[in-house]
Image (cartoon, rainbow, N blue to C red; front, side, top):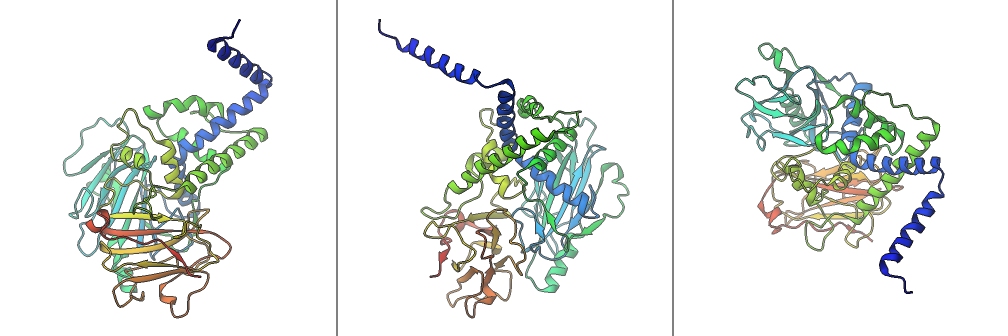
Amino acid sequence: MATTSMERRVMERRQSTAGASQLSAPQLAESTLKRRAVEAVIWGMPAVNYDLMLQEMLHKTQGKVNEVIYWSKPVDWKNQTLTPNPDAIYLMIFFNTKDGPIVIDVPPADGGSFAANIDNIWQMPLEDAGPNGADKGAGGKYLILPPAYKDKVPDGYVVLQSDTFGGYALLRSNLASHADADIAKSVAYGKRLKVYPLSKAAKPGETRFTDLKDVIYDSTIPYDLRFFESLDRIVQTEPWLTRDKAMIDPLKSIGIEKGKPFKPDAKRTELLNAAAIEAGACLEQKYDAGFPPFFPGGHWALPALSELVEAMQSGYAEPDQYPVDARALTYTIGYIGIKRLGTAQFYLMTSKDRDSNPLEGGETYRLSVPADAPTKQYWSATAYDRQTHALIRNMPRAGRASNASEVQKNPDGSVDVYFGPTAPAGKDANWVPTDPKRQFEVLFRLYGPEKPLFDKSWRLPDIELIK
């Protein structure tokens, strides 16, 4: 009698099950642990990214939660956060609302301005601040409420209801130029910022600022046990969000459970290290596949997939979409969530040259920035280590920008920026040094982007190898 298709499928399932049953109970447990640990890395990437930055502050600096840390000079390679901007003054506030609401008091944009974003621990944007934020340059008191806050909120605040206790604000105090006087002016404007508990709003006192300009501040992603230690801190200190409760049991199976210590033995540590490496390789493969090109046929791309941008703008409100893979990919490259993407700033990134080859630190390249770049403030081109996505270590500078007065323009108003281990003859002012032993990537920023960028009537050409 002929075998039916249904009977064949039943036989195939039995054979598959029989193969799996040959694994011992310990082997099955190890396979499950590693599989779930890989998914935990991908799911937990933005929160771990946040925690790594927080831990650097707590353990390497005098900075504290609900205060301000800042860099009194444009950041150099010692700032090993992911793809920072070396052409602005950086200020950060790590806040925690467990003891009550926190106020971030942003000054009006007179004598300076911020491009600022306020996020929860998942780097979900709560609000933007500054001329392109909720206060529209008039200044404002941003009141961050803890989860499930029920008390009456006083008038006069921009109210931000957070679903996590922790979070942070990144404030870029804009630079007119890199001249000492303009840097000092930008720092002075940044120090008009205030942070205090709502309970002390009547007499907030002085805000404490800690300068980190000489601190090696490393929050690059570690693909080993340290990732899970960060993830455990998040689970222990923050509430479960409804959309993430499906992760409770998978995390429990790898040893991360609310209210219990995370103490993996040697064997589990080995498996977790292997899982972290595998997750990193998966994300690396996605990065290599590239983001959709911003300009047709080119390599410049917004380093965030469209499904992530849409989900974040809606606060993950779409019931049939939760792009954790796309989210993990972006937060291996950088940090911060932006509520109004494309207003205060816009980003384009590439790791390939015009011929689709990786950017090699031992070669020399040219980026020709056309005249009349569509920006109200400035553009910048910054090189980062391709592997770590941080500024290239031990380099005298990280990029070139239109707000650097020494940068030379061509007669037609365009600017040629050079990347390589040594400057081409006569081009030192426009040169960005690279490590000849490592690949690199370039992030092109436009602060105050304008319409010709978005309608693509102005186009940034690909980086070309100089042979």
